[in-house]
Amino acid sequence: MESRRGFIRNTALATAALQVGAVSNIFAKSNTSKGKKGKMKLSFMPYTLELAHVFTLATSSRTSTPDVLTKIEFDGLVGYGEASMPPYLGESIESVCSFLSKVDLSQFNDPTEMEKILDYVDNIAPLNKAAKAAVDIALHDLVGKIIGQPWWKIWGYDTGKMPDTSYTIGIDKPNVVRQKTKEAAPYKILKVKLGRDTDKELIETIRSVTDKPICVDVNQGWTDRNFAVEMAHWLSEKGVVFIEQGMPKERVEDNAYLTEHSPIPTFADESFQRLPDVIKCHGVYSGINIKLMKSTGLREGHRMLELARALNMKIMIGCMTETSCGISAAAQLAPMVDYADLDGNLLIKNDAFSGMKIVDGKVTLNDKPGIGAIPTKTLKFP
Ligand code: MG
Image 1 (cartoon, rainbow, N blue to C red):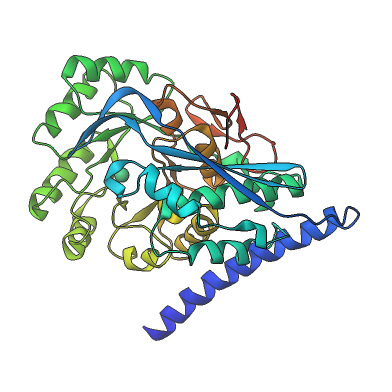
Image 2 (cartoon, rainbow, N blue to C red):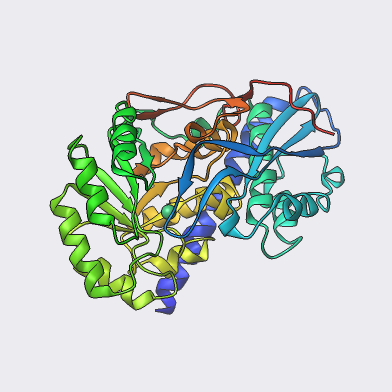
Protein backbone atom coordinates (compact mmCIF):
# COMPACT_ATOMS: atom_id res chain seq x y z
CA MET A 1 0.00 0.00 0.00
CA GLU A 2 2.81 2.38 0.98
CA SER A 3 4.62 1.72 -2.29
CA ARG A 4 1.41 2.39 -4.21
CA ARG A 5 0.99 5.70 -2.39
CA GLY A 6 4.62 6.52 -3.08
CA PHE A 7 4.15 5.77 -6.78
CA ILE A 8 1.11 8.00 -6.94
CA ARG A 9 2.86 10.83 -5.15
CA ASN A 10 5.87 10.54 -7.46
CA THR A 11 3.65 10.49 -10.55
CA ALA A 12 1.97 13.71 -9.46
CA LEU A 13 5.28 15.37 -8.66
CA ALA A 14 6.86 14.29 -11.94
CA THR A 15 3.89 15.70 -13.83
CA ALA A 16 4.14 19.00 -11.98
CA ALA A 17 7.88 19.26 -12.63
CA LEU A 18 7.37 18.53 -16.32
CA GLN A 19 4.71 21.22 -16.68
CA VAL A 20 6.58 23.95 -14.83
CA GLY A 21 9.91 23.09 -16.46
CA ALA A 22 8.40 23.24 -19.94
CA VAL A 23 6.86 26.65 -19.30
CA SER A 24 10.04 28.14 -17.83
CA ASN A 25 12.12 26.92 -20.78
CA ILE A 26 9.78 28.33 -23.38
CA PHE A 27 9.60 31.61 -21.49
CA ALA A 28 13.38 31.80 -21.22
CA LYS A 29 13.62 31.51 -25.03
CA SER A 30 10.83 33.95 -25.82
CA ASN A 31 11.61 36.68 -23.31
CA THR A 32 15.38 37.03 -22.95
CA SER A 33 15.55 39.74 -25.56
CA LYS A 34 12.87 41.80 -23.83
CA GLY A 35 14.19 41.49 -20.28
CA LYS A 36 11.26 43.55 -19.01
CA LYS A 37 10.13 43.33 -15.42
CA GLY A 38 6.95 44.78 -14.06
CA LYS A 39 4.33 44.16 -11.45
CA MET A 40 1.21 42.11 -11.85
CA LYS A 41 -2.16 43.69 -11.12
CA LEU A 42 -5.31 41.70 -10.33
CA SER A 43 -8.77 43.28 -10.86
CA PHE A 44 -12.21 41.68 -10.48
CA MET A 45 -15.87 42.50 -11.06
CA PRO A 46 -19.16 40.70 -10.23
CA TYR A 47 -21.01 39.52 -13.36
CA THR A 48 -24.34 37.72 -12.86
CA LEU A 49 -25.03 35.08 -15.53
CA GLU A 50 -28.60 35.07 -16.85
CA LEU A 51 -29.77 31.58 -17.76
CA ALA A 52 -31.62 30.94 -21.01
CA HIS A 53 -33.94 28.35 -19.35
CA VAL A 54 -34.91 27.81 -15.71
CA PHE A 55 -32.37 25.21 -14.56
CA THR A 56 -33.75 22.40 -12.39
CA LEU A 57 -31.66 19.84 -10.49
CA ALA A 58 -32.79 17.07 -8.12
CA THR A 59 -32.79 19.55 -5.22
CA SER A 60 -33.21 23.11 -6.63
CA SER A 61 -34.20 25.47 -9.50
CA ARG A 62 -32.70 28.81 -10.52
CA THR A 63 -32.70 31.49 -13.30
CA SER A 64 -29.26 33.05 -12.75
CA THR A 65 -25.77 32.11 -11.52
CA PRO A 66 -23.49 34.46 -9.55
CA ASP A 67 -20.15 34.95 -11.31
CA VAL A 68 -17.04 37.11 -10.88
CA LEU A 69 -14.71 38.01 -13.77
CA THR A 70 -11.00 38.61 -13.15
CA LYS A 71 -8.09 40.06 -15.08
CA ILE A 72 -4.37 40.13 -14.42
CA GLU A 73 -2.34 42.85 -16.16
CA PHE A 74 1.41 42.62 -16.72
CA ASP A 75 3.76 44.35 -19.13
CA GLY A 76 0.97 45.47 -21.49
CA LEU A 77 -0.68 42.01 -21.60
CA VAL A 78 -4.00 41.02 -20.00
CA GLY A 79 -5.10 37.57 -18.84
CA TYR A 80 -8.78 36.90 -18.09
CA GLY A 81 -10.35 34.53 -15.60
CA GLU A 82 -13.66 33.71 -13.98
CA ALA A 83 -15.29 32.30 -10.86
CA SER A 84 -18.74 30.75 -11.32
CA MET A 85 -20.64 29.98 -8.12
CA PRO A 86 -23.75 27.81 -8.40
CA PRO A 87 -25.34 28.38 -4.94
CA TYR A 88 -25.09 24.72 -3.82
CA LEU A 89 -21.27 25.00 -3.75
CA GLY A 90 -21.32 27.46 -0.86
CA GLU A 91 -19.50 30.34 -2.58
CA SER A 92 -21.07 33.71 -3.39
CA ILE A 93 -20.11 36.97 -5.07
CA GLU A 94 -19.36 38.32 -1.57
CA SER A 95 -17.11 35.40 -0.54
CA VAL A 96 -15.24 35.43 -3.86
CA CYS A 97 -14.69 39.22 -3.82
CA SER A 98 -13.60 39.04 -0.20
CA PHE A 99 -11.02 36.34 -1.08
CA LEU A 100 -9.78 38.18 -4.20
CA SER A 101 -9.32 41.41 -2.23
CA LYS A 102 -6.73 39.52 -0.11
CA VAL A 103 -4.72 38.40 -3.18
CA ASP A 104 -1.72 40.70 -3.63
CA LEU A 105 0.04 39.83 -6.90
CA SER A 106 2.12 43.03 -6.86
CA GLN A 107 4.71 41.13 -4.76
CA PHE A 108 5.54 38.99 -7.85
CA ASN A 109 7.35 40.37 -10.87
CA ASP A 110 7.49 37.22 -13.02
CA PRO A 111 4.13 35.67 -13.98
CA THR A 112 5.82 32.47 -15.18
CA GLU A 113 6.63 31.61 -11.56
CA MET A 114 3.23 29.96 -11.57
CA GLU A 115 3.96 27.41 -8.85
CA LYS A 116 5.08 30.08 -6.41
CA ILE A 117 2.18 32.39 -7.24
CA LEU A 118 -0.55 29.72 -7.15
CA ASP A 119 0.84 28.11 -3.96
CA TYR A 120 0.60 31.55 -2.36
CA VAL A 121 -3.01 31.95 -3.58
CA ASP A 122 -3.98 28.44 -2.42
CA ASN A 123 -2.57 29.10 1.07
CA ILE A 124 -4.56 32.31 1.65
CA ALA A 125 -7.58 30.27 2.84
CA PRO A 126 -8.51 26.56 2.84
CA LEU A 127 -11.67 26.69 0.67
CA ASN A 128 -12.68 29.36 -1.92
CA LYS A 129 -12.04 27.00 -4.85
CA ALA A 130 -13.88 29.10 -7.45
CA ALA A 131 -12.09 32.27 -6.33
CA LYS A 132 -8.74 30.47 -6.62
CA ALA A 133 -9.74 29.22 -10.08
CA ALA A 134 -10.46 32.80 -11.14
CA VAL A 135 -6.83 33.75 -10.37
CA ASP A 136 -5.40 30.52 -11.84
CA ILE A 137 -7.29 30.89 -15.14
CA ALA A 138 -6.31 34.55 -15.56
CA LEU A 139 -2.66 33.67 -14.79
CA HIS A 140 -2.68 30.82 -17.34
CA ASP A 141 -4.21 33.19 -19.90
CA LEU A 142 -1.52 35.79 -19.18
CA VAL A 143 1.41 33.32 -19.26
CA GLY A 144 0.10 31.71 -22.47
CA LYS A 145 0.04 35.20 -24.01
CA ILE A 146 3.61 35.88 -22.82
CA ILE A 147 4.73 32.59 -24.41
CA GLY A 148 2.54 33.24 -27.46
CA GLN A 149 0.83 29.81 -27.44
CA PRO A 150 -2.43 28.25 -26.24
CA TRP A 151 -2.10 25.83 -23.32
CA TRP A 152 -3.16 22.79 -25.33
CA LYS A 153 -0.04 23.38 -27.46
CA ILE A 154 2.22 24.10 -24.48
CA TRP A 155 1.11 20.72 -23.08
CA GLY A 156 1.67 19.10 -26.48
CA TYR A 157 -1.87 17.77 -26.85
CA ASP A 158 -3.21 16.28 -30.09
CA THR A 159 -6.39 18.00 -31.27
CA GLY A 160 -7.08 15.14 -33.67
CA LYS A 161 -8.73 13.29 -30.79
CA MET A 162 -11.28 15.80 -29.55
CA PRO A 163 -14.29 14.47 -27.62
CA ASP A 164 -17.94 15.08 -28.43
CA THR A 165 -19.55 17.37 -25.89
CA SER A 166 -22.84 16.53 -24.23
CA TYR A 167 -25.74 18.95 -24.08
CA THR A 168 -27.84 19.10 -20.90
CA ILE A 169 -31.59 18.58 -21.03
CA GLY A 170 -33.00 19.81 -17.69
CA ILE A 171 -35.86 18.18 -15.78
CA ASP A 172 -39.14 19.53 -17.20
CA LYS A 173 -42.63 18.67 -18.50
CA PRO A 174 -42.63 16.06 -21.33
CA ASN A 175 -43.55 18.56 -24.09
CA VAL A 176 -40.69 20.90 -23.01
CA VAL A 177 -38.25 17.95 -22.81
CA ARG A 178 -39.25 16.88 -26.34
CA GLN A 179 -38.71 20.46 -27.58
CA LYS A 180 -35.31 20.77 -25.85
CA THR A 181 -34.24 17.40 -27.28
CA LYS A 182 -35.03 18.67 -30.79
CA GLU A 183 -33.08 21.92 -30.07
CA ALA A 184 -30.09 19.74 -29.14
CA ALA A 185 -29.87 18.42 -32.72
CA PRO A 186 -26.20 19.51 -33.26
CA TYR A 187 -25.01 17.48 -30.26
CA LYS A 188 -24.14 13.80 -30.45
CA ILE A 189 -24.58 13.04 -26.73
CA LEU A 190 -27.39 14.25 -24.48
CA LYS A 191 -26.97 14.74 -20.75
CA VAL A 192 -29.97 14.26 -18.50
CA LYS A 193 -30.35 15.13 -14.85
CA LEU A 194 -31.97 12.28 -12.93
CA GLY A 195 -32.64 11.57 -9.24
CA ARG A 196 -36.42 12.02 -9.09
CA ASP A 197 -39.28 9.53 -9.15
CA THR A 198 -39.99 10.51 -12.78
CA ASP A 199 -36.56 9.31 -14.05
CA LYS A 200 -37.84 6.51 -16.29
CA GLU A 201 -40.56 8.72 -17.77
CA LEU A 202 -37.94 11.39 -18.61
CA ILE A 203 -35.69 8.88 -20.39
CA GLU A 204 -38.68 7.40 -22.28
CA THR A 205 -39.73 10.94 -23.34
CA ILE A 206 -36.28 11.59 -24.83
CA ARG A 207 -36.27 8.14 -26.44
CA SER A 208 -39.58 9.01 -28.14
CA VAL A 209 -37.71 11.76 -30.05
CA THR A 210 -34.15 10.43 -30.53
CA ASP A 211 -31.95 7.34 -30.14
CA LYS A 212 -28.74 9.36 -29.54
CA PRO A 213 -26.49 8.21 -26.69
CA ILE A 214 -27.49 9.71 -23.33
CA CYS A 215 -25.41 10.21 -20.20
CA VAL A 216 -27.14 10.74 -16.88
CA ASP A 217 -26.22 12.82 -13.85
CA VAL A 218 -28.06 11.64 -10.76
CA ASN A 219 -26.54 14.32 -8.49
CA GLN A 220 -26.49 11.82 -5.55
CA GLY A 221 -30.23 11.22 -5.95
CA TRP A 222 -30.33 7.40 -5.50
CA THR A 223 -30.36 6.32 -1.88
CA ASP A 224 -30.72 2.50 -2.16
CA ARG A 225 -27.84 0.63 -3.76
CA ASN A 226 -29.94 -2.24 -5.09
CA PHE A 227 -32.31 0.25 -6.70
CA ALA A 228 -29.26 2.06 -8.15
CA VAL A 229 -27.92 -1.15 -9.73
CA GLU A 230 -31.39 -1.95 -11.10
CA MET A 231 -31.56 1.54 -12.63
CA ALA A 232 -28.06 1.15 -14.09
CA HIS A 233 -29.18 -1.98 -15.97
CA TRP A 234 -32.42 -0.36 -17.15
CA LEU A 235 -30.54 2.77 -18.30
CA SER A 236 -27.93 0.69 -20.11
CA GLU A 237 -30.71 -1.04 -22.06
CA LYS A 238 -32.04 2.43 -22.97
CA GLY A 239 -28.71 3.46 -24.55
CA VAL A 240 -27.32 5.40 -21.57
CA VAL A 241 -23.51 5.38 -21.76
CA PHE A 242 -22.51 6.38 -18.21
CA ILE A 243 -23.85 7.42 -14.80
CA GLU A 244 -22.54 10.46 -12.93
CA GLN A 245 -22.71 10.54 -9.11
CA GLY A 246 -25.45 7.96 -8.62
CA MET A 247 -25.41 7.89 -4.83
CA PRO A 248 -24.55 10.36 -2.03
CA LYS A 249 -20.86 11.29 -1.99
CA GLU A 250 -20.23 10.09 1.58
CA ARG A 251 -21.60 6.59 0.79
CA VAL A 252 -18.25 5.26 -0.48
CA GLU A 253 -19.08 1.55 -0.21
CA ASP A 254 -22.46 1.94 -1.89
CA ASN A 255 -20.90 3.88 -4.78
CA ALA A 256 -18.21 1.19 -5.13
CA TYR A 257 -20.96 -1.47 -5.15
CA LEU A 258 -22.81 0.39 -7.89
CA THR A 259 -19.62 0.67 -9.97
CA GLU A 260 -18.87 -3.03 -9.53
CA HIS A 261 -22.38 -4.13 -10.55
CA SER A 262 -23.18 -1.50 -13.19
CA PRO A 263 -22.91 -2.52 -16.86
CA ILE A 264 -21.91 1.10 -17.71
CA PRO A 265 -19.15 3.31 -16.23
CA THR A 266 -19.74 5.53 -13.20
CA PHE A 267 -18.22 8.99 -12.68
CA ALA A 268 -17.54 10.91 -9.47
CA ASP A 269 -18.57 14.56 -9.44
CA GLU A 270 -19.71 15.74 -5.99
CA SER A 271 -17.28 13.15 -4.47
CA PHE A 272 -14.40 14.59 -6.42
CA GLN A 273 -13.01 18.03 -5.61
CA ARG A 274 -9.21 18.39 -5.24
CA LEU A 275 -6.17 16.39 -6.38
CA PRO A 276 -6.03 13.89 -3.45
CA ASP A 277 -9.62 12.87 -4.31
CA VAL A 278 -8.29 11.13 -7.46
CA ILE A 279 -6.81 8.51 -5.12
CA LYS A 280 -9.99 8.37 -3.00
CA CYS A 281 -12.16 7.82 -6.10
CA HIS A 282 -9.85 5.17 -7.60
CA GLY A 283 -11.64 1.83 -7.20
CA VAL A 284 -14.89 3.51 -6.14
CA TYR A 285 -15.87 5.03 -9.50
CA SER A 286 -14.82 4.23 -13.07
CA GLY A 287 -13.84 7.85 -13.63
CA ILE A 288 -13.80 11.46 -12.45
CA ASN A 289 -15.43 14.69 -13.57
CA ILE A 290 -12.83 17.49 -13.53
CA LYS A 291 -14.26 21.00 -13.25
CA LEU A 292 -12.00 24.03 -12.93
CA MET A 293 -14.28 25.63 -10.31
CA LYS A 294 -13.64 22.60 -8.06
CA SER A 295 -9.99 21.97 -8.93
CA THR A 296 -8.96 25.63 -8.25
CA GLY A 297 -8.16 25.99 -11.94
CA LEU A 298 -5.94 24.60 -14.69
CA ARG A 299 -2.81 23.86 -12.66
CA GLU A 300 -4.54 21.28 -10.49
CA GLY A 301 -7.01 20.24 -13.22
CA HIS A 302 -4.04 19.29 -15.41
CA ARG A 303 -2.46 17.27 -12.59
CA MET A 304 -5.74 15.46 -11.89
CA LEU A 305 -5.94 14.49 -15.54
CA GLU A 306 -2.37 13.16 -15.66
CA LEU A 307 -2.78 11.24 -12.41
CA ALA A 308 -6.15 9.73 -13.39
CA ARG A 309 -4.70 8.59 -16.72
CA ALA A 310 -1.77 6.95 -14.93
CA LEU A 311 -4.33 5.08 -12.80
CA ASN A 312 -6.28 4.03 -15.93
CA MET A 313 -9.42 5.91 -14.82
CA LYS A 314 -11.88 7.48 -17.22
CA ILE A 315 -11.92 11.27 -17.41
CA MET A 316 -14.61 13.80 -18.10
CA ILE A 317 -14.06 17.55 -18.28
CA GLY A 318 -17.11 19.39 -16.99
CA CYS A 319 -18.16 22.90 -16.08
CA MET A 320 -20.63 25.06 -14.20
CA THR A 321 -22.76 27.64 -15.99
CA GLU A 322 -19.87 29.89 -17.08
CA THR A 323 -18.97 32.37 -19.80
CA SER A 324 -16.78 31.28 -22.72
CA CYS A 325 -13.81 32.40 -20.58
CA GLY A 326 -14.02 29.51 -18.09
CA ILE A 327 -15.25 27.10 -20.77
CA SER A 328 -12.34 27.89 -23.12
CA ALA A 329 -9.89 27.37 -20.25
CA ALA A 330 -11.41 23.96 -19.46
CA ALA A 331 -11.38 23.06 -23.17
CA GLN A 332 -7.55 23.27 -23.17
CA LEU A 333 -7.65 19.88 -21.37
CA ALA A 334 -10.26 18.37 -23.70
CA PRO A 335 -7.87 16.54 -26.10
CA MET A 336 -6.96 14.17 -23.25
CA VAL A 337 -10.41 13.29 -21.90
CA ASP A 338 -12.95 10.56 -22.68
CA TYR A 339 -16.00 12.84 -22.43
CA ALA A 340 -16.54 16.59 -22.43
CA ASP A 341 -19.48 18.30 -20.80
CA LEU A 342 -18.69 21.86 -21.80
CA ASP A 343 -22.05 23.45 -22.57
CA GLY A 344 -22.13 25.96 -19.67
CA ASN A 345 -21.68 28.97 -21.98
CA LEU A 346 -24.56 27.81 -24.18
CA LEU A 347 -26.95 27.88 -21.23
CA ILE A 348 -26.55 31.64 -20.58
CA LYS A 349 -27.93 34.71 -22.38
CA ASN A 350 -25.15 37.19 -21.56
CA ASP A 351 -21.82 35.53 -22.47
CA ALA A 352 -19.07 38.17 -22.24
CA PHE A 353 -16.40 36.22 -24.19
CA SER A 354 -15.86 34.44 -27.47
CA GLY A 355 -13.65 31.35 -27.43
CA MET A 356 -13.95 27.60 -27.74
CA LYS A 357 -16.65 26.58 -30.21
CA ILE A 358 -18.65 23.40 -30.54
CA VAL A 359 -18.61 22.30 -34.18
CA ASP A 360 -20.65 19.23 -35.19
CA GLY A 361 -21.03 18.36 -31.52
CA LYS A 362 -17.25 18.35 -30.97
CA VAL A 363 -15.08 20.63 -28.84
CA THR A 364 -12.80 22.60 -31.18
CA LEU A 365 -9.81 24.61 -29.97
CA ASN A 366 -8.43 27.77 -31.56
CA ASP A 367 -4.79 28.92 -31.93
CA LYS A 368 -5.19 32.04 -29.78
CA PRO A 369 -2.55 32.21 -27.03
CA GLY A 370 -3.47 31.57 -23.41
CA ILE A 371 -6.94 30.12 -22.84
CA GLY A 372 -8.20 31.18 -26.28
CA ALA A 373 -11.00 33.51 -25.15
CA ILE A 374 -11.44 37.22 -25.90
CA PRO A 375 -14.02 39.66 -24.41
CA THR A 376 -16.93 40.48 -26.72
CA LYS A 377 -18.00 43.54 -24.74
CA THR A 378 -16.34 46.30 -22.74
CA LEU A 379 -15.77 44.95 -19.24
CA LYS A 380 -15.69 47.77 -16.70
CA PHE A 381 -13.26 46.47 -14.12
CA PRO A 382 -12.90 48.93 -11.21
MG1 MG B 1 -22.60 16.52 -11.98
